[in-house]
Image (cartoon, rainbow, N blue to C red; front, top):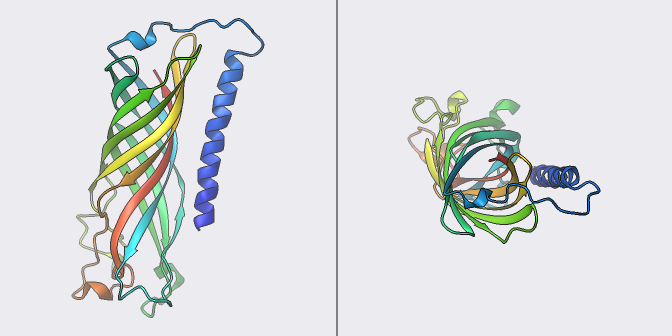
Length: 250
């Protein structure tokens, strides 16, 4: 399962590189003399845009020491490719620093496969689908290098707040009724990098970023002895980790 995730991350990076190559070739196919597009674009104090993209999320687990033995196997994860869409507001601080807010909708799905347990009577008892629909609100510092013709690399640093519309936190049922519950809100930190391409009519900016939750998102099963649950009993902490590719149009 870990290999599958690594392959999906590599595929996301390959897609980003291909998009950069296609854009660069379209902009400068054989022309030697460079035409500077949108020369005053970065002088704007405030501007807007939108983005679309892909993501891949998984979870990082921490376990109870008494629960984690040599015979215990980690919970396996099988993340899927999700999508992102949202808006951008950009505030210019100086020539190299911009502050951005990028509210968007992030959809993801993760399959959790639990180790064998005596309570499980069917193979489906080991599988839990965790679908997440995040209203994702990041506050980002965009640190840009000097512009080179119609290109400009940048780094992204920031924090974000997630509101999970699919958390099931109000559901009275739990895993004993095939309902996996998570907290409805969490905070993240984000880091990323990308390239600005100044085209004739607009600026196109592909970027890749990591999104790392700072809060425990697990809601334990509602049993008298929390450690007795074969799904959540051994977990002390569960946090999201995600990678996203955003294609920005400004």
